[in-house]
Length: 521
Ligand code: HXC
Image 1 (cartoon, rainbow, N blue to C red):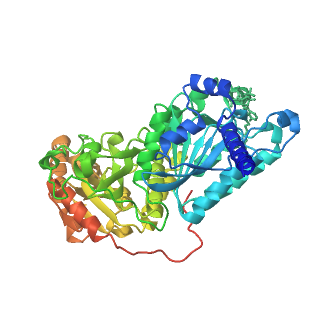
Image 2: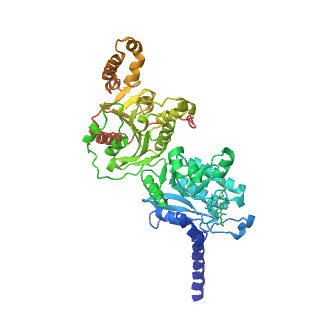
Image 3: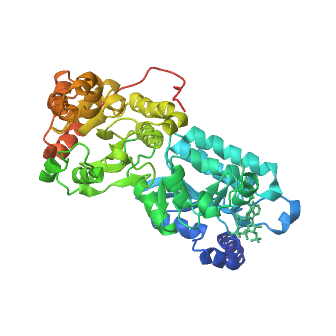
């Protein structure tokens, strides 16, 4: 009997020994080197990301079976990626965290298979996938097998798109074709100074284009958060990146058939804000910060802004109204007068499509003077990029509410969730101006002759502008056609919106059956 117990204990001991070996990654020296770079290890990151003691690892004992180029002497349990499932704020998630201490987190057959396994499980069980990327890319020694493993992941990223939320946190290198996995996911969070993403690195760039750039300049977090828009969030360090991921998840449903989570708030639903009445300057050319409007309306002024540093002429992000998650798209008069251009159209279109895919109602706050004119915009494709935004609004079937705070001019009026593109409830503040264009531009076109031939053209123009403003720079003509549902006093915006989103909570709308549409990509 004693002998039997001893044998069983020995087996259990062996199991723990193997698990411990898996936990040690590439060894203490490489862990120290990871820390010296200001980076956490794969497992430390998971510990911070998930609720305490909820992580269950899968495939901790998997390893590569390659003998090429000395790999048989470098067999590490786990094969450079920690995978499994856990809970974040009690919501089930699947995750993988690449371990740079093992063969530089490089990806090959086993490493890729492990990631695919948890993605398949996430899809079957309707749970978000979070990827923590820190990898030297395709494992050179395993050659084309590594490339195949990447493609297996890309396919799953694509199939999972619009089914479960996918979040990528890039916390180290992510280069070459490897960038396309995060790029297909819904959100990318990058870490300043320690992460970079590029299709070709600085050396190749220097040879081909003679541009001399550091990795940071070419594809660091600041670059992708402000110049390319590839990254949605720009974190100071690993810890902040993880906090952002947790916060982001708090707004999202687990999958495309669930509702977003409800979070009770002490912020009264009937709270009115007198300051909103006076927030819009009387001079239509004077800017104001739309963030102030957002913060005054939403629960607890708690706004998670997405793409904060890119295309700042439009604001997008998540908030709650009366405890329900909403996505906000808001023109920003404080940047380029809130005009729509290529990047702001792309930014808002992608955000709208995410919200629509995951049943998150959309609030549009509108103050837009139109589309940005110029050769750069035309040659860059403002036509097809602006059309993306229009298309995204048109196809979205989630509850859609618009508040026009000031300008709704020209084609941009149609685009920004007008009634005509299935806006469910469209409100205007008394300061709203719905018109083909601003008074000055309109007068210059329709009264050109009258102004030119007047004894005092300047006085004539200003008289005509005043007349035009009086007649057209208001919401009442649009209201007379039902193009807006109601004109509301700004201070009541929060209670009116909460009431409206409650009304639309069970909205059902659909698009004609089709394989998929053909958004002007
Ligand atoms: C195998 C790799 C590796 C890789 C790094 N390592 N990248 N092993 N395949 N791709 C190993 C190193 O040999 C080293 O092993 C350890 O990881 C740490 O690497 P270091 O170079 O010491 O670290 P660091 O100085 O921080 O530099 C990190 C790095 C560099 C910039 C990522 O390692 C690098 O340039 N690696 C190659 C990157 C690359 O060209 N990858 C292929 C990209 S193309 P030891 O034993 O010393 O700890 C690609 C295509 C994907 O990925 C296509 C999908 C379609």
